[in-house]
Length: 167
Ligand SMILES: [Zn+2]
Image (cartoon, rainbow, N blue to C red):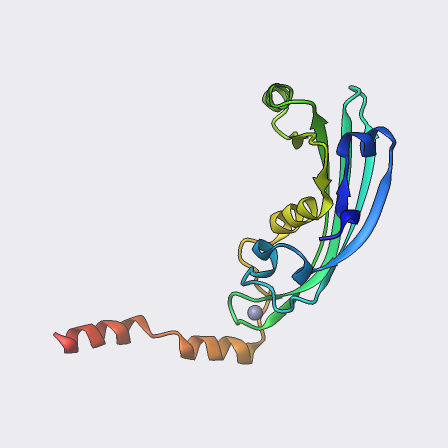
């Protein structure tokens, strides 16, 4: 882990700093690269981070994560390209109490308590995990591939027949 990924979030936001970078999936935490959906762990994701202050005077970080990563189609098990471009605003709070009361009045709010240091990589990881589809599938799997899946899948009646004969 390089120190370049560590920021002081409140100072970063107050000074309206920005940061751009890229990660390979396999440079990220295991919870990302060990994800069974990824067909290629060398795929690259890009991120931008922009600090600022909103109209309520609250400090925030605007995070953008984009990538084009190959996933494994959960229907035909062939690779499929998945493009994502996620942006989100994370509002910084001095303490849990401030965060909690803000969350109560705005259910769409994404916020965090500003620690002294924040690992940008963790933000990027969370954003990728949120962007991943629940079950990636081609809109239209190739006919050949679909045929193969159907052959591999046991016919429910055959399974029933097997159960009966084994009694
Ligand atoms: Zn497919």
